[in-house]
Picture 1 (cartoon, rainbow, N blue to C red):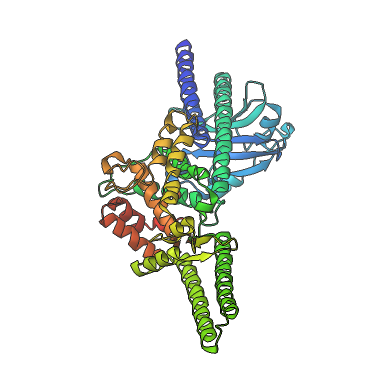
Picture 2: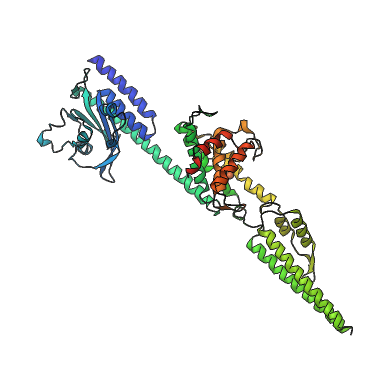
Length: 508
Ligand SMILES: [Fe+2]
Ligand SMILES: [Fe+2]
């Protein structure tokens, strides 16, 4: 007997250690039921958590060896459900009173107990619940947080017997340890949920600064996680042995959500730039061209006045001046039309650039009689971009977001298993052939997690509704671009293959 109790205490101790090291609630609950069943030789077991806000018991875990063997799979009835917290049910009675119930036969309850056994589950599954042991799970303040229910203790011959009365206190101890572990796991999940909400809220707000990037980080996180889990399910090719653990997936998820957080350091007018010059800048330019026209008219009038003054006016001279003015006005309007076209265009070819240079050099007299260029140097620089609408400095500013991301994310005191989040996030614009940025590193320096994010990031950007520098591209074309990028050695071929073959692109 002494030997038996000592052995059981040792087992209890080991279970306590195992429980305290599991922080994922769902796995912890499964572990508690499994260990408690093992401890008591119970054929089945369940676990309920008390939800005082809703006044109910949430049925979280159900394990049943007999049914598992019979169905090979969990029967349909094992889906989580809630039952109202009253003393009418056995589990409800224990959850409210905190009493331990050791029932020899659930079908023969004394009438005075006030609770009854619900046989629905047994009927549906052709199961016979006989002996039961129910203990309340109390936290360190003595508050009942759940109920552990063990069913059909079996002896060495496999026969269902009553639960040993001597084991009740040990199961109560186990339930108390379980309650502490559950509280810890719930606390960790709550903190995680707050942290995740904070990340998702702030990143979504940053994305929403520009309609072009709204929802981008969420989309990238979805594709990233879908591609990582598709890789876990891939058992051929160079990544056949890759299996990301839940902790690694969590790390990758944070990195994907945070990858563009550095865009907070990029000016909105640059992020959101749709044309080479802004509407306000274009308005100022258009007004100037009106002044240029007015200046041409004044100049002509002055010349006419001089002719008058010197008595040299004649119909032919006046006509010539009018014709010249008409041509000048026409030319000014044509120049303005060319600028407007360049302003909204995506590509500027050599002849367009030459034309722009000519216009830039043209001069007119302003109201104060000062000679000025048709275009300011700022306007000329912005208009003369060959591709897209961003100047070199603006491209650099946008690219700097990765450095800001690294700096910002580095300041988050991540726990050990999340410590590579800044590293993964900061590399999402690096390309395998070294043509990316900011560090221009090559394949060997780019971790698989970052490569996954890069594929997800490019695809999300391609199919996004529209961007300042591109129109929306359909799914087929976007996938072709991914294939080409892989062929050209910029993206990971195998990742692109899995992304396409496993239809990861449909996961958003
Ligand atoms: Fe980015
Ligand atoms: Fe991005």
